Image (cartoon, rainbow, N blue to C red; front, side, top):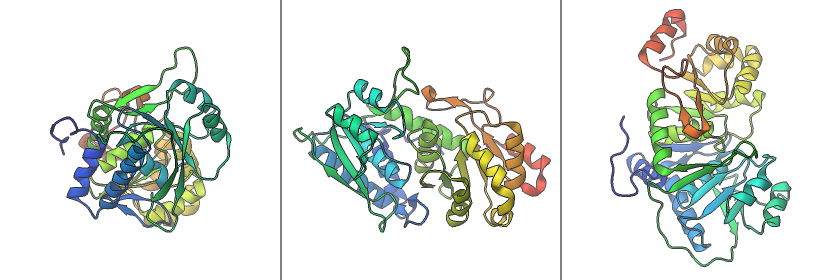
Length: 351
C-alpha cells in the first residue's frame, strides 16, 4: 500500500481520495450503521457532490468555516466528509461545555445542527447570529443519508474544490485556558495521517471497523474513519456507546476490528463474560485503543476474551495520529508484535 501520487493541487484532498475509491470500488460498502442499509463508495461520492452543490448555493466555499454540532452516527460522518470536501469543517461535540466560546472565537460562517432540537447549541448559535443549517436523518434510507435545510444571507460561492494545503478541519481546543488554541489540519496533513494509520494497522479492503469513538475526536476521525476509507474498507458508525448494545453491534455488523477509548474497553471487558458465545461467533483480527492509557490488566483481559491482539496507540491531537515506535507500546500490527502475541497465546491467533 502506498499513498496516492501527486496530481496537481487536489491529489491529497479528501474529496479527491474518496473520488478515487468510488472509481476503484464503487459498490464496496463505505459507511454502515446498526439496523440501517449500508452506503457504498459510489453513493457516498454522490452525497458529497450534492452537499458541495448545496453549500456553494448557500454562499459557503473553499475558504469558509462550517461547524457541525451533531450526535454520533452515520449522518455526522457523511456531513463531516461533505463539509470538509467543500470548506473548512469544525466538528464539535454537541455536549461540549465550551461550545459558546468556540463559536465566538473561530469565525464560523454556518453551523449544522440536528433538525427540530432546541437545545443549548441552538441558543449559542443564535446568540452569535450565525446561519443555521438543519440536518434531518432519513432512517429508511442508507446509513448517512440526510436532508439539509436552511438558508444564509450570502451570495452563492465559487464552485472551487479545496486544495491540498487548504485547511480541511479545525479541531477546537479541549479547554479555554489562556494558551488554548484550535488545531488547523490541512487536507495533506489529514490524508497522510490516515495513510500512516492504515499502514500501521495493515488495513485493506476486506477490513470492517466498528468505531466507537465519534469523528469529532481525532482518534475516531483518523484511525476509525479515514484510515479505513483511504484503503476502500468500510466503517460502522453507531450512535452513542452503550456497553450492552456493543455486543449487539458486534454480532449484527461483524467487524474485523474495533477502536475505542480505555473507559469503553474496560466496560466491555467487565460485561464480556455473559456474551462469551456471541464473542466466539464474531472473531476479531485486532482491537485498538487510544485517547488515553489502557491499563495493562484491561489489555490482558481483552486479549484473553477476544483471542485477538490489542493495539495500544499513543499520540497527540496536535499530531493528528499516533506516535511511532519506539515511543508507543504495542502500537502497530508489525510481524514481531503479532509473532510475540501468537507465541504467548497460539490458540488465539485470528488470521
